[in-house]
Length: 607
Image (cartoon, rainbow, N blue to C red; front, side, top):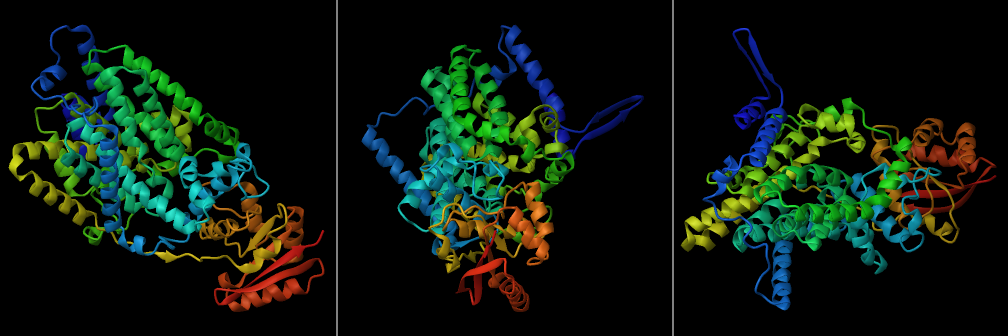
């Protein structure tokens, strides 16, 4: 009954009924579902006869038939894994073909340039001074500036060998970005093959997760593509619950840590998501003690691995601050947002209202249809667990409009740093992919002779639905040549001009971060999810550059050099600025070079 009430509350955005003098008001689904879980837990704990959960699942085959190893030898397993990786790489290339053809381009000149700089900084700093990894070269003289945005330490380490080999930063960025699509499909394949024992069903699940529409909505957001560790955490948790082995519990903790170090957003969301699923699996196995001990060891391992990052963010909490409830509310989804496709969708984009940012969450038809097939009775424990996890993920994406998220925001400090709860919808996609694997297995078991035809047809429909629009912008292969004149100087502080005021200024400086990957000098400029007071002061105090007050302010900020880029000014404004600089005695021109059909100049500020 409570499950039915909660489902009605989700579909109708709340219940408000009057029956005589009684009033029933339910604004969100979390309370009915919570009561259902409490009653189910009490019933399972105290009543020895079969519970509702056991009656629902007694006729269903176990969903974890492939969890316990294969008869193949290690060379055979590696060969098969290589084929799976190749298959998902081809699938990714086919659906992102414009990007594959133009590996020197990015979706826009904002966030992608920031992420290019971020992974390049990790590869640069990790071999020079790893203890100061978070003291990145932006927003000088602020410290721990890498904590101003989502942490992508693991992707930075993954890409480091490519930087050390001398590949171009934009090429490296795109290779790692596209590999996230493919590897997410691979790890989902491994999870669903373990759960269903079927490679064909696993291929469908992997394709859905690799091509989920959320990825194209957030295509410029590199960190939000790093989802390959989520299925591995689920796979390891299933094995831990089934076998209670320490190594599986540690594997769960390791996968969780890798996901958290790839995106703090996803680490915080994953911590919530694992609870209902793990609880259902644990109850169904009779509340064994060994899995809990193994998972506790995994949690301890995860805590050790993420503690340096947590320490950096905690140390800089006063600067990073917390997101106000009004901002979190603005980026909290509503039920109708799941009916809104994104403009990048080739098939459904015509129905996009281009509405509120980050809240176009339409999951497409095939994932929902196959998931619904999986949820048709009889149900297994795992499918019930994923159904509950789906509800938790959907409600989590509702953020301040949902049931439990306001409690997390009020009482658990890390969640007050999250700006966009709607990003929880990637876990909706994760769950739909797993359930779609179950649904596919059910269809193929019903018509085994048409297995290949049905698999190909399902995959074709998924690919057609997933076809994106992908406008791209070419990135400059080289920065202005003026930086070569200070390449040998240690730690010369730069100020880059023009500096744009908000709102454009919030992403404009990303291009200067990209330029800095070729010289690594400290910048007073910067781009991140949080802007320090010193940067906002810079925008105000230097708005009339190169006035006496602006130059004096830069000198007080210990700026050594000023770069002025004609490509980002109109010609008249650029000429006026460089004439004023050339007339000053306290500023000396160091270099000038043509760039992008204009000119860039570098000036030294004399002390």
